[in-house]
Length: 176
Image (tube, rainbow, N blue to C red):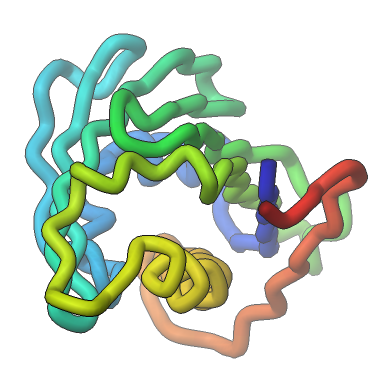
């Protein structure tokens, strides 16, 4: 399983950060590759989302499901088909807030098994292998996670600023 975890400090109370994150359809505005998000449910546990991604000559719609919601701290999700992947958004109070300003640490975590990708799920151009696509996409996952977190911070705080992202090493993470 490959694992990526990114976190940053946001200068809003944890409850406000959580309510912002639970509104998943807005994520399409933050992502370079996520074209649309179609919601099936209320946003709580059991809600499914069709996520249409486009990159290079490829387009793919993934279906994710919210597996748990623990307000105001955590949203867990998993992909329903075509790839073994799951993750979470977490929000924790940030004790190092400046001058009494409330702050939260927002965490994005994803675990995925590249070798689990269903080769029939994506229509590939001639002479392009799924393993080539996976090799090209893996570094983009980290770039995309960082981009999304930066854009979320700008929206939450109401203006862009230099965001310090912490990329955490996860023990036991292995490449496939």
